[in-house]
Amino acid sequence: MRAARFLPTILSMLLLGMSLLDRSALAATVELIVDTTQTIGEIDLTRYALGQGGVSEKPMIDAHIDQLARLHPRTIRLFVQEYFDLYPKSARYHWDTLDDSIEAILATGARPLLCLCFKPRVLFPKIDQDVVHPTSYKDWEKLVFELVKHCNQRRRYCIEYWEVGNEPDIGEDGGCPYRFKPEDYVAYYTHTASAILRADPKAKVGGPALAGYRSRLGDALIEHCAKGGAPLHFFSWHLYSNNPGQLRQSIKEVKAKLAKHPRLAGTETILDEWNMSLGNPVLTPAFQPAFVLETTYGFYEEGLSRAAYYHIRDFFVDPTRFSPWMSAQGTDFMAHWWNVMPQYDGLWDNQGRVRPAYYAFRLLSLIKGQKLAVSGSSADVKAFAARNGSWNHVVFWNFPSSGPGEVVEAVVRFPKGQRGQFRFIKLDASAPVNNLAVIRQGSAGELEAQPVRTKLEPYDVDWIEIGQ
Image 1 (cartoon, rainbow, N blue to C red):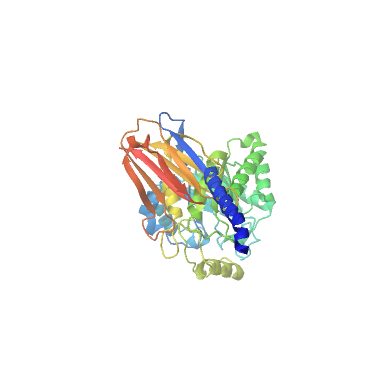
Image 2: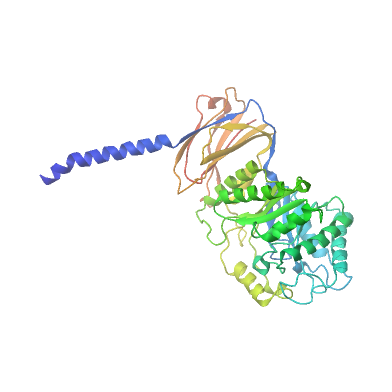
């Protein structure tokens, strides 16, 4: 009898719950309309490309050249680190080992962006990250001059971008043997940039590849170059965060600083290390590929010139290749970070297994050619669309703008009269193989009456192609 007294209340709660579920489902619906009847200019997302960590003199990407070529990266950033042993003795140069890594990059179809962060003992006899000036700037400039001349005249590698230093604001904590004060970096940059441009006047010089984009070191470089102290063809920095909005904010701030100086109106912006948070990465398999797409969307909207995802492959460190020029503490840090700590950044892991983020870059490589307009996107659901040759490609995803996000019902519509065939494909980040799964395919003409409908879980990534 007592239970009967509560029956109306229980029924009311059930009905309310069902009503809320219905309302939630209705609220989370997005209709994307892709206009294939006209184009709105050119688009090429392959400039938001890749980099390889500075951990070994071996050509670390050798095993993946064919797969990387399918991504069509415009550039691949490479650390020119001391383990290449470019200057073993005074007036003696050794290029062969570096050439192997450069040629591996060229084999992918990309052009190298060289980050100069080597520190030969001949010119820096003391192992100390705070000793940042060579014993002879004349000899240092000669070395840099010969390096550029070797690459671009003798070997004809056509390397355009030359970056001076890597994370000079944090030194060995960033894997490199220099830790600069602002005034010291400005002097070092000026000497190095001068040598590069004497060897190749068409080269682009820049930096400082900051670990913290708000560092005073970066401000000092901008002010110095704005006064004519040295050329600054590009300004570079790094950022690791699980929040794509933070990467977008860094672009806004850097561009605002450059905009204050008319002399720097043509300075490019390059975010040449980026990924999830290093200290607190999100390990949900679907997160990283969706993060790549969402972050790249921000790059494109903010007008970032170039980027280099860090990085292509996780790789073990040989401490004996670092100890001759890095402190014992720095060498131990590198060995522990790369050989002991779990790694989550590479498109391939230490065992050469591909991560789902690779497929995000594969989809981005298709967004090249004539841009197609897409309307109906939301704060969470966004899309890229392009006509690439005889194919139209649409890539769309659900990246929660806040909180855990929600399932979204997405409807993708095209104008009538579509010709050829279509395929609707999902990126299944959890699948051990066959990560790109064909869900539906058929005649493109049927899309008018039966548009693509799909439920997008948080971090889902989908792709539609239409063509012959």
